Length: 243
Image 1 (cartoon, helix red, strand yellow):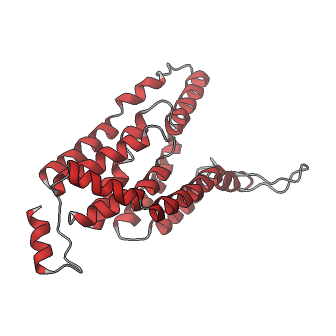
Image 2 (cartoon, one colour):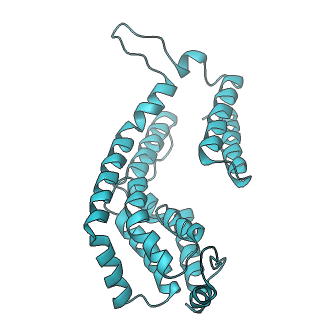
């Protein structure tokens, strides 16, 4: 609750700027982590002992760095299991049959394909409490083949997939991100005598609703859409444009 902690937002800004400059996401995040550590030490909100404690009497070390790694271990293992399931599904041909059925039944244009990508991603993130596994599950098995059939650029398909996974997902009270937010806000409110909002207020998050609106408007109007030309013949390019 100190104003000096707002300086840590500079680390987030560094991640955004580095990403916009075309740096790899891992490099951008690394620069952001390093900047956060430096800023935290400079404003005396962190100490070197906070980052990594020596081995304790119980034989376990601790600290922010180690806690950060251990905090994502479960998600990593979950994704590895998801990847195994994806490979089985792809080898069985089930997803190819589903894509063929979807195309024959109600998807006839690239616009409909993009709307389907958005809607299916949103739906799959509702029961899963982590959005990254949902992206991994749909990306290779559903979104990629669908986008290739309707001439949707890989970058646009990736944006539709990843951004859709960051809309409704961040508004549902049973998801881990909302639980973490509510836990943090509740503890801060109790400590400083503030009124804590109910967890259902996550349903009113303006960013998620705005992002969902932008996605659907982009799919319906074709805003920022470009036709991929690499590896396509003139006839295939014309077909993609007509769709």
